[in-house]
Amino acid sequence: EILLKEKVNVNEGGPDGVTPLHCAVRKQHRKVLPVLLKAGGDLYAKANDGSTPVGAIQDADYRSYIAGLLSSQDGRAATAATGSSKRSPLPVSPRFASPGPYAIVLEDGAQYTGETLGGVMHGMGTMTFPSGDRYHGSWHKGRKHGFGQYKFANGDNYEGQWHNGAQSGKGVYAFSNGGRLEGTWQNGRFLNGSGRYVFADGDSYEGQWRSDKMWGSGTYMTAAGKVFRGYWEKNEFVAPSFETR
View 1 (tube, helix red, strand yellow):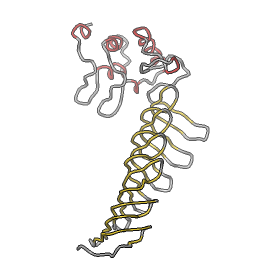
View 2: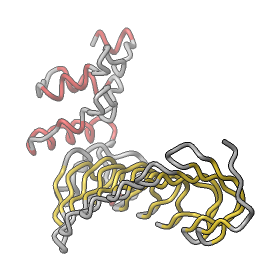
View 3: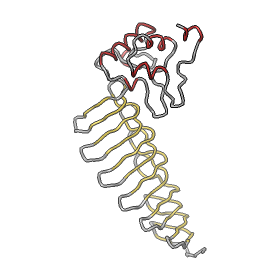
View 4: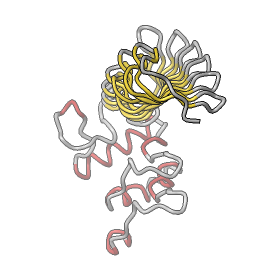
């Protein structure tokens, strides 16, 4: 009650970012928890290690208990199925999964572990595919969205931005042969425009691209330090070459 009277900020964490609500949830403290929630405790507050109070709720009975508290206080436990515009920390119906760590196995055998909302992948999570590919990063309504890393079974690796399930935005694609492509992606393809490719032998090219090829003005530097600037077309240097050093 002192917290309520003094209007203490219960979402202010310590040096490690852990808030009082983090501690209360982890210890399943049923006397302190209702007070913290009433004082505005945020179940989504992130500590420095990325953990959240809602993510620490593993016990089903305890989850139901907290959902009941929220529902009795101000209806914050309404789920997406009700059409409520309020964020839903804990759905009441068992038909909906917790936004905290949760495991999902898809029909094709892919396995997901991470945050969910309304029974779908939403938040931070990891998907392992039957092929051996693995994605770890942000999800939005069941699709890869935001920043994430995709490791292919063949050794290739993409790390960067995603949008609506596809590579879109700034990213780096590292090939298993040692090459690395840096630039902008759109709908899963490297976008025409500027980018940088580092070859396995140490050579590099930085400049314009088209159709996944060096095409336009660009600079090629060898591992030995020789630099060539000019115009490229379909990976071929078509302008008179010259060395700057």
